[in-house]
Image 1 (cartoon, rainbow, N blue to C red):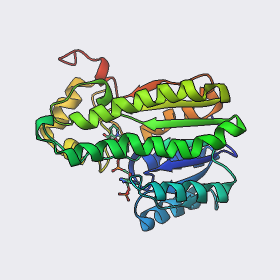
Image 2: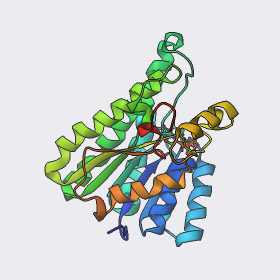
Image 3: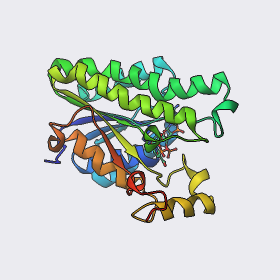
Image 4: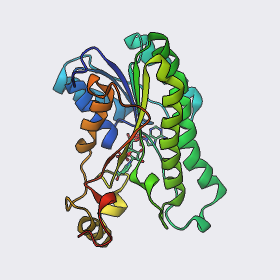
Length: 258
Ligand SMILES: NC(=O)c1ccc[n+]([C@@H]2O[C@H](COP(=O)([O-])OP(=O)(O)OC[C@H]3O[C@@H](n4cnc5c(N)ncnc54)[C@H](OP(=O)(O)O)[C@@H]3O)[C@@H](O)[C@H]2O)c1
């Protein structure tokens, strides 16, 4: 049910963090994976590590900045030429250039959040989905956030963009369903990566989060990978348009965490 042998996967933002964990576990499950981020040396290093651990030729690096449409066109074209198609897409790369109340965000920062977290996801899916739909087989997973389910005085624009990702998945699930292409989101809670370093290195933030979380801790990147594999594999074949929360229970806890 969870075997990905023969599947061709493309994971944006996969040189480190959650994207790298997903790419590594997908390769372990048998998929061929395209590693992508802005830095070609980091992509090469990630692909080398996967090839060394799980078999030569399973991973290829193709650098791309998700905010540059021409980069995404090259990414998809090169991955298609290398593998002959893309069966699984993980839209993982995202940005958050503003920390603080929405009143303090500049238009440029607001646009950046939307361009990187929503518009670029739409671009990448638009480039990959036609091949999936023509083959009548494909699974697309967007890495959203529990921020898309809750309000925040600090990361408001980011949260709006992550809520938009959930709606993007619902819309596209309806559009693509007849062609057997599924679209879902994963909404992680706080995960220990470079992206969230400012939060988990702050003892007050970390302590508050741990106290409110039923599992009593933040997540590790590898703990998001299993859900990505579930949604990509035959195990998830009747799941579409959904957002799966992977957060140690923090969104279902009461105010005190008790
Ligand atoms: N960590 C958390 O607590 C948390 C919680 C909920 C949701 N998320 C979501 O999880 C996803 C991954 O985050 P993460 O925590 O794994 O972050 P991370 O460790 O910082 O990794 C981000 C990855 O994306 C790449 N990237 C960044 N900007 C890019 C761009 N413009 N174009 C292409 N690649 C880009 C980075 O490589 P380069 O810098 O080389 O480009 C890196 O490979 C994001 O969508 C984030 O919103 C994270």
